[in-house]
Amino acid sequence: MLLYVMRDVTPSWCRNLTLSRKFFVSFGALLGLLSLTLAAGLFYLSKINGYVDRHQRITVPAVVTAATIQRTALAFTADRVARRDLSAAFEPWPSQDEVGVLSRSLDTMLGTLRERTGALERKTKELEGFSYSVAHDLKSPLREIEGFSSLLEQQYGSLLDPTARRYVTTIRTSALRLSALIDDLLRYARLEQQALPKTTVNLKALTDGVLADRAREVNAIGAHIRVEAPPATVPGDPTGLRQTLLNLLDNALKFARQATPPEITIGGSHTPTEYVLWVQDNGIGFDPRDAERIFGLFERLHSAQDYEGTGVGLAIVKLVMEKHRGRAWAESSPGKGSTFYVAFPTQHMNQGSSEH
Image (tube, rainbow, N blue to C red; front, side):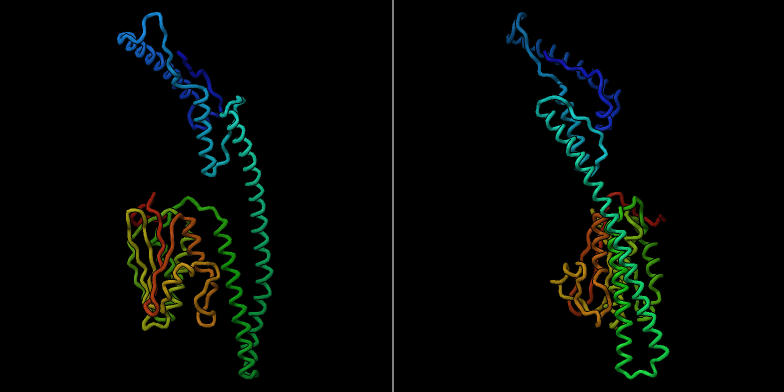
């Protein structure tokens, strides 16, 4: 009978399998005892059934072998790599069998992945610094253009003919639009590179804060806001989720402002797998065939002259929901308003109104 009892293990095995050395050694001894018991039982059954006599031997395959343990540790390490954990300490085995070859290949792959991941992180930080620098260099002259055109309009507007005043207004509006575009692109880049913080967000408190921030815009167009979302606390990024709801509310205010009166509903509901939050308006609506396209970066259904915007707002909504492993979509018909939805997975989600 081939019998294998584990006497000791290396520290790296314990780290990779997240188990203690004492567990390994005790488990190996237990399997050894089970092997002896199994061998004795099989021998006894074979003898009483006439399969062997007392001079013959039977061989019982090993319950646990070194290769089996090596394969298990290898599988655990590979699983951690698949989950983007490159911190696994791994010592390849010197054996020449397929397990040894595979372990050495995995060790080489881990080294290469760490090097390339480090290089990518450095390039990402360099690109982030470059984008902020370019944005600053662009916004400085834009602020001057907007400021001086505003002064020209205020102080010398009476000396200009209508055509010249229209030119000045166009210059100022274009500078403001480009400045807003730069801000949105920076916000998009920041959200894309930012790791998702492990915290929770109270959606009721979030909704109240967003409505307070947009109270002036709501009052300016006489919009009626109704909140029908049940209280819920979801895991996620407070900054990203606040930007998501702000963008959806701004979108509703923009396209419903010509309605009489503009009506906007913020609602929510639970499903077995998701918490769905939506923003509904009675605005101009859009063709259902454009429901996916509008979430693309720089995608617009209307000209900037008709409806202000940068074409980045809904792309930010989609990006934030993807980072939360959720989804975003819209439903609409021309002239019948629109409803924009975002859905959060219900895993680890708390219902209620506790503040976080």
